[in-house]
Length: 303
Image 1 (cartoon, rainbow, N blue to C red):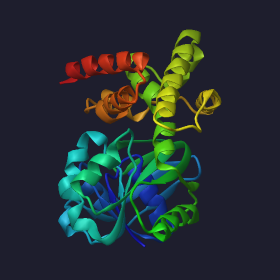
Image 2: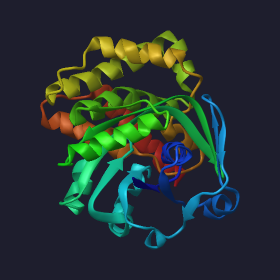
Image 3: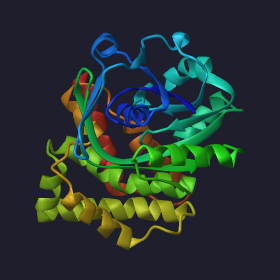
C-alpha cells in the first residue's frame, strides 16, 4: 500500500520511517526541514536500533504528492484546520485517514469537513522527539493502536495493522472510544503538569504530593470515560500507567516541548474538549479544569 505522512515530526516521522524502511511506498510532507531531509534523508536514533533513510520521498507542497491508500496525520492538533486543504489532494475513493494525534473529538471534527472519508484514530504509545532537522530520537516504547471511527472496509484496517506489525511495530485494532479515553488517562495529567511545574515525568512521580495529584487526575479521566460508556477502564489502569511511567526514561511530553520551543500548546483537544464532553455527560473534572486554566494563562504569556 502507498502511504502519505502529513506532519513528519517525532511521531508521524517515526512511524512513516519504519514503514519506509520495511519497503512500503511512503511519501512525506515536511515544512521547516524539507530542504534538509530532501538533501540528507531522515535519521532515526532509536532505542530499538538506529537506522538511516538516505533517500526520502519528501515534499513541501501537498499538491505534488500522489493519491495514496493511507494518510497518516501527525500534525499537532493546533493545526487541525490545515487538513481542510492538505487532505483533498491525497484522497482516492477508498483512502483511509489515520489521525495519530492527541486528544478527544478529533475524528468527529474532521468527519464534519469530509463526510465520506474513512477515518481511524492512531493511538501512539511512544517516547519520541524531533528537536533538530531530519533527526528523530526514539527513546522508548513505540506501539500503536488503531481505532476504527468510520471505515466500512475492515480489510483496509486489518492491512494497516499488519503493515505496522511487519515493520516491527507492535500494533492492534482496538475499540475507538475506549482507545481515545485510554490514551487520555496518561496525556491529560502528564502533558499539562510537566508544563505547569516546568519538569519531567520522573520528577512528578518521585515526589509524593505530585504523584498523588497525577493519580487523582488519572481517576478523573477514568470517571469521565465511565460516564461516557467506557466500562473497561478502572483504578487498576491508573496504577498500570503510573508503573509504566516509572519504568520510562525521564521524559518531556509533546506539550512540554511545545512550551519549551514557544509553539502553541494543544490545550483544546487534550483538555477543553474532553472536559466539555464529560460535563455534558454529567461528570466534572475539577483538577483537570484547574490545570486547563493554568495552561491557558501560561500560553497567553508565550505570545
